[in-house]
Image (cartoon, helix red, strand yellow):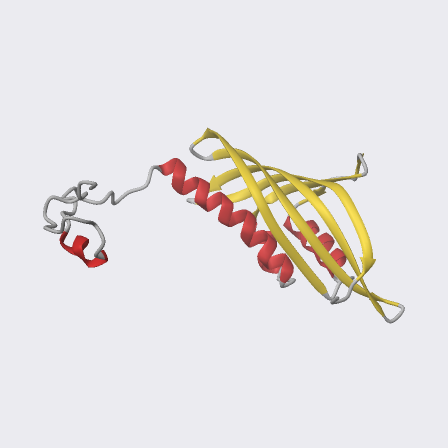
Length: 180
């Protein structure tokens, strides 16, 4: 017979699930604060996820506010670098123009790693699987893109923003969209 895990339970076997209801609970106070780095990591993950959510809804005016006023975005496609887009107004024009081609936009974010240079500066790498669907000649065409974002983040007025982003489009697949 195995000893029972709780001294207060009088049962010889631990077969009654309710027997542990009176088990002794810790009297240590719960931690009421989170280390700043942990809360910053959460905020940076939320920043990247919010960028994607706003893109999916084509809420570009809100999306560009996640960047600093003079942010820079560069993109690489097939190893070729495109000219950087600098400033919120230019980002708004570029993002709006690109997403206008598609009636459905869907981002699925994956892993993110972050390195802190200071309490107000960090770099990060995150991955995203993007599906974009447009109508072409009466058919829905899906464009699936694998993107690796290399970001520089800055904390301004207590809020994390993207200062620069390199969007590396690592692969692209196009197919007719449909539910099978």
